[in-house]
Length: 293
Image (cartoon, rainbow, N blue to C red; front, side, top):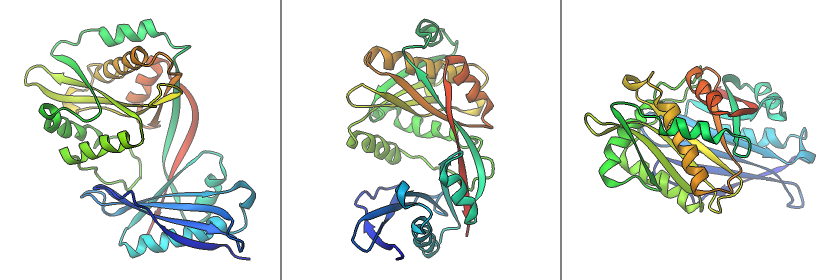
């Protein structure tokens, strides 16, 4: 019997995106899988939707994923979007499922982990403390301080030319309200957002940043959310400086933390070099797929 797909209501609607969710059930109401469609709302990304489909292992190859995908694609078209993207681990069932249904690969990503038990923390500390004439580091937890908010929002443009290959990802437009909403979302999950930023001492403006999200109990692995430097300030070692400072500070504040996770587009050669220099070890690769509507 064909699975029943039920639309659900997601109460977590924010200023930058909203979600549509579907649940697939069998005739007895047993859950078989789900789909989540994130609809971006801000200027620069209002053409885009991001899809995630999960099907229980025992229920695969029985049409559950296809039914969920059909519901999500129909909704994407109804919302007037031109592209839907989905990410899957290389070699996983999704890596076969998506291209068989019209998605094309547009971006390759490498995921890596720094084991703090194995890391050369002394060398990382030296990177963090090494002076960079004309620049200084600042840091904060949670929401950016008011006096830095506008400069920090402008520095987010450092991500605009991040290698995205053929992905129709658009441009993420950051303002102070979006910064605050993002920090508050992390806090609501009970996690800790720590940011290190590089400041140009000539004018006091932020020219780069490195964000890290740490579990509230300080255990397990923390997750890097982004590290970037404005184009005019690249080639001076600021990215490695900020990321090293972020690692150093995380270990200092959370000595039981096991490791730090990061992901980088394969074409982002400079950031991959930073990760290699700091001791991150690749764990797996993923592929971003896109369906053009």
